[in-house]
Length: 206
Image (cartoon, rainbow, N blue to C red):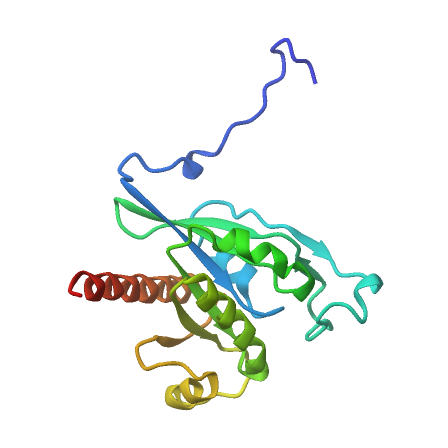
């Protein structure tokens, strides 16, 4: 490249610029086990081109990584996914998807730092994976909602059965979603924002 000005480095696309009406922003983390749909959710709902850090799964991961669904999944997030969505003219959410493989979970603490809230994605075929995820959020004091990603071959359960299985208190919202659909993913984020608003109101009254 000629650094004397004959070649230029392309800047961000027009749609990637932060809207001039923005007055507030919040950091939201999308967490869950391997293959639960975190990268898909960030990609489906982000209004900017999402940043992903997916790498190809190789033979070296056998016996180390979670290989559930590896027949169809060929890549895994090794650092984070990043996206952005505007929920009002004034408020934007910065979305951070966490890596699902357990050997990358040491990155979670940094991603949780400064987060207003979190979405815990759950796969009903492997509910047990969610316990450590929720435990880490609780340890970090990060409020969260639970979103059950509906896989075609995943069993469906009533919400109260899921609440009992996950040992969740009644105030934590549980919703079903299809993270491939933008509207469904956006609804999950709006559920989280309503929950965070209710928490803020209850704290202001105490």
